Amino acid sequence: MESVNPEVIFSTFLVGGTIGENGFQWFECTDSGPGNGPRKAAELYEGATKKLKIYRDVLGASGRKITVEEVLTIEIKPGWKKGTKITFPEKGHDTRRGVIPADIVFIVDEKPHGVYKRDGDDLIVTQKISLAEALTGHTAQLTALDGRKLSVSIGSIISQTHEEVVIGEGMPIHKEQSKKGNLIVKFSVKFPKLTPEQKTGIRMLLFIFILLFCFGKPRRYERKAS
Image (cartoon, rainbow, N blue to C red; front, side, top):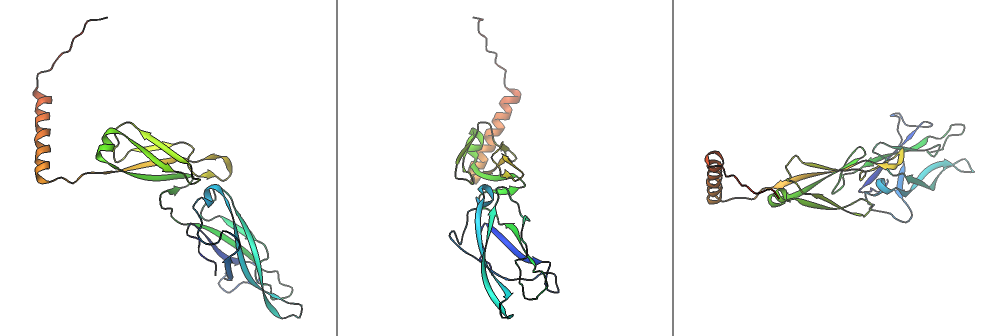
């Protein structure tokens, strides 16, 4: 069977021709050539070439069934999504004379990335920040799927529902290669654990602040016009 790619998986089945009773016929398939094994999630961002070795049954010159080895090349296009189909016509088993072999169809399946979540053409990332950073501002340092370094600065107070949208830093749009989706930066604010004494002190400070705000004598600052 095909070796599993941790970032992009190709499910494989045959359609048409001599197929099984359930409509699908599985066959043996493995990775082949340089770049075997684990691949980066950037395959669906930048595009890549994937070589797959298949073993198919055919009729030999003597009329007997033999197993042959072939290598199929799939050019992964930037922006491909889960469910994209790649068809190799008549590359299935060919063991019956006068019957057209089945097609081989590969279906792209996308595994979760460790940092980014894909939503259509957009990428979503969640930054964990401290309460101090949420109150004073934060700069998110990110590495794009193509290796570029991105800095996203937020100077305002950051709430749990705050979202920063970076235009054009999402996934490539497959049918419009000159365009990309957006990068959406979300935030998870980590609140510090307080002792009972600290909680009591904060309550007292809030109470004093409310008293001063509600009942304190307003002050007026005056200055001469220059």
